[in-house]
Amino acid sequence: MSNAPLHKLIAQHAQTANLLGVDFVPCYRTLQAAPQPAPRAPTPIKPAVGRDRQAHQQALDAIHARYLAHKPHEAFGYSFTNIVFGEGDPAARLMFVGEAPGAEEDRTGRPFVGRAGKLLDGMLSAMGLSREHVYIANVLKIRPPNNATPTPEERNASAPYLCDQIAAVMPEVIVTLGLPATQTILRTDSPMSKLRGQWATFTHPDASKACTVPVMPTYHPAYLLRSYTPENRKLVWSDLKKVIEKLTA
Image (tube, rainbow, N blue to C red):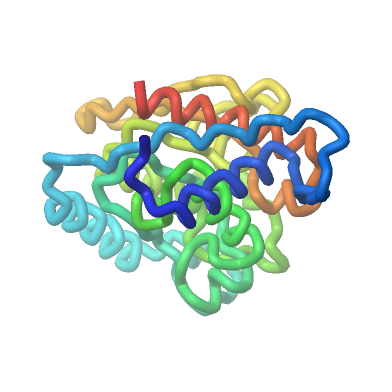
């Protein structure tokens, strides 16, 4: 039996049910049919232990400082408000990677805090996690005009810093959100239809980093907001369940 407070377990069950496509639960005084069992909450993912978070954070700070010094975004030729480097547990077991900041992220300097970020928070809650348990970053560190899809040139200019972020955090699993992030991390031009839901591997281009991490590609929360169907939500939840299984094995 879980020791978690009842209200947290109820909330987690609700998040899980929602990701499975259940948008409401009807209530009747008398049941017309046998009740269906509620979706089981996933096995909790334990946080990383025995890792020197200060050392991981110092490595991330050094990459951030190098990014600020080199300013690779200057070649992109567009304006922005804030650089959105990344945030979360510097020694997280699980890392999420998106494509680029949006308007709210540009305003605040934090990743995934707009509408797509709220959906990502719900995905994390359904997994029994919160933002403090994971590390979140994007390929691009500044917002493209009108949230345009990052070009191959922009992704290539930004990728070295993202790869180093991954090596600094050294997660056990990476979840890539959307096609640009997935193609960048896996260095592939395959379509999302062939990548989503299939385990792949990130290997740092610099062999001396000795960084190899399993990758689970899934749809970007912004795509779900545009195509919020039970089918798409079930696909994403099936991807996340594979991550849970790997991290709780």
